[in-house]
Length: 240
Image 1 (cartoon, rainbow, N blue to C red):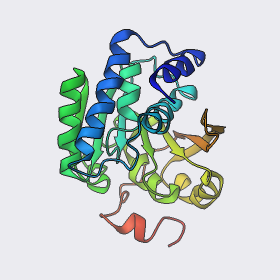
Image 2: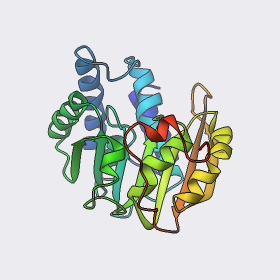
Image 3: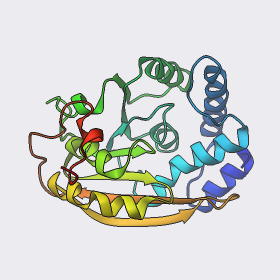
Image 4: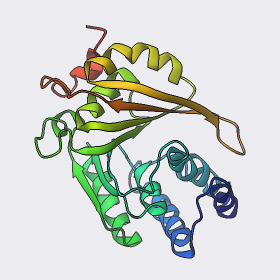
């Protein structure tokens, strides 16, 4: 998917990019490739791959959720900024908080935000387990999202504690989503969530399968969650 096709595909979905936004994506691509030579940000560096599998894929969250509203978003394990930075470019009114466990990725994101002249963004070098225990952030976000970070039973414990009551946890997955959702059913329930949508689609141009799962936060998460670093992955809720 080249930049022109990217703009056209988004237009078909009702997302119209102006010249400034198109230029921001171009800058994003060039910075991603440049910094990737110094650190491992992505295995995809070809323009067509970045625009399709990173930019367009990230923005596909907006096909299932309304980002026109001025909401607060927390993106767990965003790496090079996916999905929240492409969403921020398209929907400048959203407030974005990114949490990542590697300081060098946070350094990249700060430089990127400066180059793109983004406001309303904050980046934290922390593990999701400890960030979710922080009283300043716990149950404070309208939307928490994650893309290709961990299996859903683990991801739920890292993300749902940060979602405010009546907020939403938006999960971006590939073809394995149905199996992961079945395995995560108990964890989602324990953590106060309720699955309200599971939409599957294919990416244009290459037809690889993607899934978006929406989980509403119906009850406060018990204080014991998230457990200390490493435990959610080692011993997921429901496998105890």
